Image (cartoon, rainbow, N blue to C red; front, side):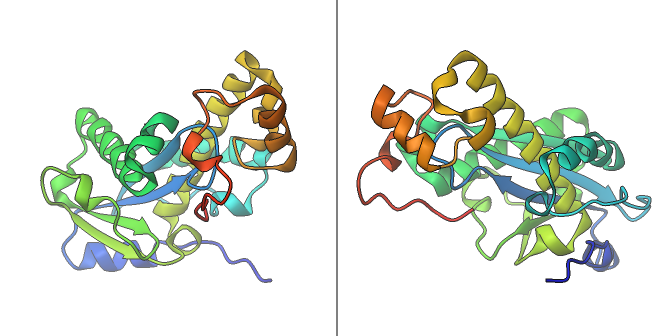
Length: 219
């Protein structure tokens, strides 16, 4: 498979259409059985410089390379933020609503930092707009399949969010080491399920996803 670098072509089209800012948006941790779901946002304008060398969708990068790129991606963007929704929230309101909560929290961080959210188009990876239903005020959201692969602002958001969440999972592993979260990052590996069978579930687990037959969404 030939892997191509993302570009700013889509962002340029949105700027040309009148958007002062584009906010790349991507989620990570959607398919995990433990830990929060995270939504990353990176804001760019028409004058943003060249993206960091090697920037790609976080799923196409090694953990070491993501760690190297995350501060570069955050520094390249005008603003960046990561919002979270907890495992308990996922159990309570479901994964889609939790994505919306996490995205709304990330937008609140951008607002506090001074980002002009109402003058922006939010470029959201995927075909489903899970963000708008969570918002109190209507914002412009444009979905795009494979935006994390093709659009530099979204690739940056994916890397920033992935590294942020991975660090949370490593920290959780240090407090509760029996589940292998430092390596599996909360995803449902065979060893992770075996540890749950041996030790029981924690409040960090999405308990509704541990029942036999529970459908775990794709990342």
